Structure formats: structure tokens, C-alpha cells
Length: 199
Image: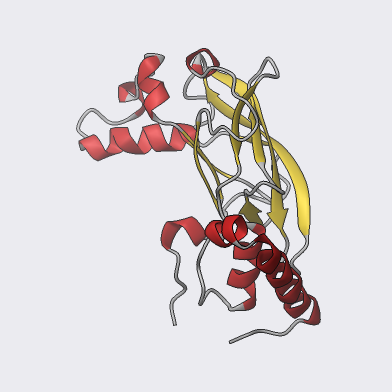
């Protein structure tokens, strides 16, 4: 049976030991941003991680600082990693045309926009909730993004324990039934630690 959840739940392609991430290295000037995040290992343990991602130069100027819990220039956080707002590339005058063949279809320009702003992160199943936020800092150390509404810790545990049969972020459960949410976290942690499956 194919796994559900689509692109949001696909595994990361990042090498486990990568420290600096740039999908198009050497193709345009960049700035170093720092991403701090949590990833869930195969046995259900959340581990804190950080990497440097390289965004096109000028991106920091287009994104104002944010308070904790505000997305800022983060578009979304998925199991595989982090997507920053591609729309800010237009604001900084980023030109993708030199990076593609002149005869390439327009979809190739879109691909460059996405590769310049979407990053697979190492470490396992990337999560983002109020207990395990993803924080993004610009080169000056200013907080420019903080995602707390990606796939929750429970979402990762349930996905792994059911071998992908259940693909959900469980953020609504976390907000509306926090006590039940935390009991469920403990139950699914137990399933993974015991090495069993609910399939």
C-alpha cells in the first residue's frame, strides 16, 4: 500500500552529516542563515538540530524580524525540511534566467525559485509545534521566522507507528484537547520504543 501524506510526508534527501545546505551552490551570491529545529529519530526520540542554509543575497533585507510564533519568511515546514517564501526573491530582484537554458520552458524558472528557497534538512522526521519549534535566524542573528504549526510531534509518531497509514499534523488535537494529545504522545512513543507497529 502506498504511503499517504503526499509531498509533506516524503523523507528528506539531505545527507545526515551535512552542515551547509545550498541546492544551487556557486550559482549566485548567498547569505548564511541558521535554522534550529527538531527531528524525530526512528525510535521516536526528538533531537535538536541546526544547520546553515544559504539563501540568495539580499533575502534578509526583504524579511523583517518577527516575534516567536510568527512565520515571517517561512512558508512551511514539512517532514523533509524547510520552505522559505519564494515570493521574496522577486522583491530582492533575484533573476533566475541566467541559471536555466534559454530554450527551457517557464517551469524551469519556477524550479530555480523553489530550489533557492526550499531545503531538505538532515536528522530524521522534521517537526514544528509549540514544544518543538523551527527557528530561522538571518546572518545578523535576527529571528526572521518561527514555525510552530508544521507536523506535530504526535504526527511524526503516528506516521512512523502506522507505517505511513495515518498522515496528519494533529495540530487541532493539540490545541483543542491538549491532555488527550499528550497521552497519545506517550502511547505512540511506547509503541515505537517496543519496536512494534499498529499495522
